[in-house]
Image (cartoon, rainbow, N blue to C red):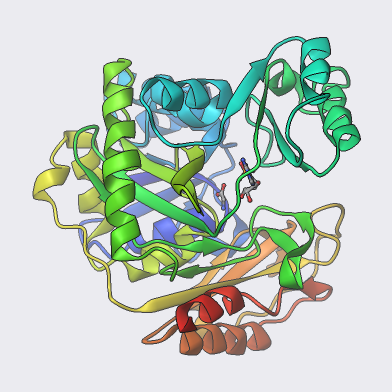
Length: 422
Ligand code: AMP
Ligand code: GLY
């Protein structure tokens, strides 16, 4: 079988490595991929948002199955366009990807179907939003409606900060049209859990839970990033919490999307907060998380391609989705200065004996050598019987990898370890 994976980060590298385990897979094309995954896939220089050329490539190269991994192409309708040409795909159609593409849509969906989430108001008029903030409870959370490269959420500790955020989104348009509508919502507290779930639109099979580390610096300091590391499972996500989430959040969401005529197939990502009043949805993503995927998929014991095809064919209920009862830790190595500004082009060394456990996010081949080509450069994932060992092993790998100006957090998994001991 010939497969195509749209995207080019660490998440896509983890998906590709897992897909390759299926003996029926003869070739995997990554569009665009990156220089660090060339051993695992044939990288083709077509951008993840260039839907016209993705479809053309798929048709011309006899692709049997396509996986659309990033949010933008999903929201832009890459799955619809590929399916129109008869190419089966993993991922939701555009009318379902809106669950991530519009925060206003997802908040209204949750309200309509009684799915627990933060209280909120929607504004299309800046003056009305500013007036509301005169009396809104503080801290408060301001969210741009549309995709904003993961940066469209501002937690404001003061009224002035909240108003500045509203002005920057609605008047200065820092996120473009994504700020035409905004959501102002209640500030929630509690441990955060990421749960990725396979679904065919009827059945939902959650993957092992995970914990992201979004801030750039140790002890959750510094700017928000795309994610500096992950562990799985998340110790806060007990069996009892999982059952509550299944009954109050996962199944109701799948059913709500069906009721709206927007059946969701693929991977639905639930960003949850375990508040004192029970689990609530912070956000939905219409795709695998990055770097959650880099700890979740290495623990998957079932064949990924088979599970993905079951979400497409509607046979997920009859398909086993099994995870190893182990722990995983992924430490992201970035270029100094990320997420603001950083240099590229530093030569990278990844020892052969650990390369199977390294997921490359931002690299290129230059003069025959692998060089850094992004903010987040790679992630090293270790699997072990205990979380403590997984963390230690991941950092041993990090020590063996070299590129100039590398930086990483030193405390990935520390919070989970502490929680697990309580
Ligand atoms: P996002 O970019 O949507 O992943 O959100 C970034 C982060 O903002 C989340 O991981 C949460 O830590 C935080 N956040 C979002 N909404 C809320 C909320 N209502 N209350 C507290 N924290 C929030
Ligand atoms: N790690 C969070 C995300 O993928 O959006």
